Every structure is written in structure tokens, then in C-alpha cells.
Length: 106
Length: 106
Length: 106
Length: 106
Image 1 (cartoon, chains in turn orange, yellow, purple, brown):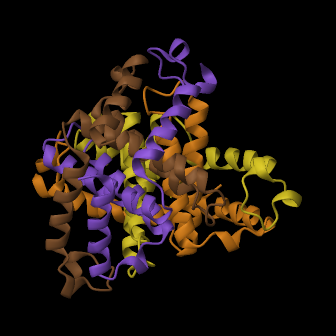
Image 2 (image 1 turned 180 degrees about the vertical axis):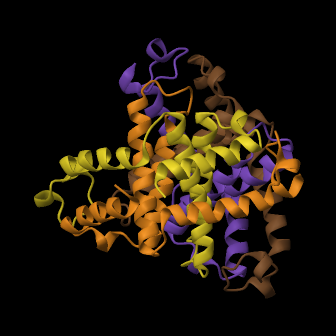
């Protein structure tokens, strides 16, 4: 199954519940942030004891990301690859090798 | 291109820069949260004026999500679908139609 | 100077710029979250190299917290103390000593 | 009660539970971000129905902010005021009046 088919399934589940009304871009952006914090909470004081929790929370973040991408007619795969090109240009191998510094401090 | 091929490209870019050392699960979880807030910042006071900014920030969140999934040998598509089944069970159509209430308040 | 006097100064700065219109409770809640991620970003890959950055980002989080408290006529000091009582009740010393587990797992 | 006295009470509660070991600056920064998202969650799809929830979540954010300030020997009131001076300089009244634009776009 490709991401397009996956999106069709997600869209259908949203439509069946009449949840499109809540899925404004802003609400989806908030939801991505909220779910990503629930993911982070698993790492708050120690490593997560249960990988299934990571799986669920990460899936929540991804689901809202896919839905927001869909709102703007963005293809998940394409925007990841396009951003990767920008990152590679900002972080050339010879300057960034083994370094976690931001590009403006390399 | 499928998500597996996409991941191979992401992995290579990380390896070329010797960045695996920074990509602990915890650091990736932090990064997902940080990038999702940069996305939210575009909606802080108003709607985003530039869709390209949304594209870039959403791509950052997604990239770290893919990398974290990879750390735990989780398939993005599969975990989204498995979580969707849980969501559907928690939010049956007849109870959740048109409602944004949490499942424990339906 | 007490927190009340501090708030008066913050309120005046907001009023001078006619920024009350942007400071809905929801926007303030978003802003607290956004600024707290900028604080977290200082710890993304390593410890912060510059304490002044921590000072500035922490101040941003606190400022929006004070402004949101003000919106709901909540006193910062009082709500911290009231929450502390709840935390103490949920985490009795004999059960929580030296443990980072959540109260429902103690 | 001033913030110094409040901090003494917070410190004692932490010490009684031997929780200092968990309160590294990084963990406190994560906690501020996590709690601020729980606050934001109250605004995810609609306005919060219960002000007491806002009170509790805001108190959690503030508590961790106070504890992190304490780690770095920063005074809450002082850093808020010092940051306010920076904000005022970046956002002069005549340029920022009634605008939610970032200082670099004013």
C-alpha cells in the first residue's frame, strides 16, 4: 500500500465521524504538537519501558501529519525529499561531519 | 517510491554526516516535538502567510518521525493503520459522529 | 517587587502595543507551548552552551504563563501551591521516594 | 509570600521524595514542554470547558519553570523583567502597534 491509499483510508474514517469540521489546519498543527509531546512524555524521566506505547504515540503524530499534508495537497514523500535537499545544502558533509552544531555555527 | 526506499535515502544522508551518534530515540523524540512547535509557530497569531513554510516544517516533523520509526524497526504505514483500528474501536461512529469529545466522555 | 506589580508592568507593555487583541487564552496557550519548545531546543543534542539563552527562553515561557494566568484571574503563587497539595496527595513520600513512576503505577 | 519562599516549599517537596536525581536541567526542560502541551490540549478542538483544568496544567508548567530557574540560580521575576526590556527594544511601540508580525518583518 502506498501513502495515497493510506490517506484514502484515513480520510474515510474522518468523514464517517463528521470530523472534518474540527480538522482545520490550525487544529491539526496543534494536534501534531500535542501528540508529539505525548510521545516525548515516554522519555520524560527514563527510557520507555514499553515499545507499544512508542508505537501508538508515534502513530498519532504521523496520522495528524498525513492529515495536515492532505489539507494542503502536499505529498508526504515529496516534501520529505525536498526538505532533505535543503538540509544537505545547509549541512555539507565536509562541514557537518560528526557535528551537531546548527548550520549558522558550522 | 515507497517509504522503505525513502528511509534508505534518509539513512544514507545521516550516515554520510556521522549523525547516528546524535540520533538516540530520546533525541529524536525531542526533535519531533521541537519541529512540531516550529510548525505550530506558523499558526501562533494568525494563519500562515506562506505555504512553503508549512511544507518545510511539516517535512521536518515527518523526517524525524520516519527516523524514530526506523530506530524501533516500525513501519510507518503499518503503525498508522494499527492505530487507526484502535481509534475506530474507541470512537464508534454512532457515538462520536460530529463530536470532538474524548472517548471517555462520549 | 511582587508578582502583582510584575503583572502590572507586563500588562502595560502589552497595552502600549495594542497586543491584547492577539492574546486570547488559546493563543497564549499556543505561545507557552511554542516558547517551551524553543527552551527545549537548547537541550536538543547536548547541554546548552550558553546560560543566557536558557534565561531568555525560560523568561518567554514564564511571561506567557503570567499573561494567561492573568486572563483567568489566577494568582501564579496560589495555583502553584494548590497544585503542590494535589501532587503531594497523589505522591505520598513513602510510595514515591526515589521513584519517577507515575502515581497510577506506584 | 514571595517567589523565594515559594521556591523553598517546592524544593522541600522534591527533597522529601528524593526527586532531585530526576530533575536535571534537560529533564526539567522536557517537563516544561510536556506540561505546556497538556495545557494546550485543553484548547485542541474548542475552548476549555473547565477552568480548573487550565489552573492545574498552568500550575504544572509554572512549577517546572520555577524549578529550572532555581537550577541555574535565576530569579523568576528578574529574568521576566530583563526579557521584557529586550522585547521592548525589538518591538518599539511605533513599529509594532497593533501588529503580530515578528520583529524582523516589521
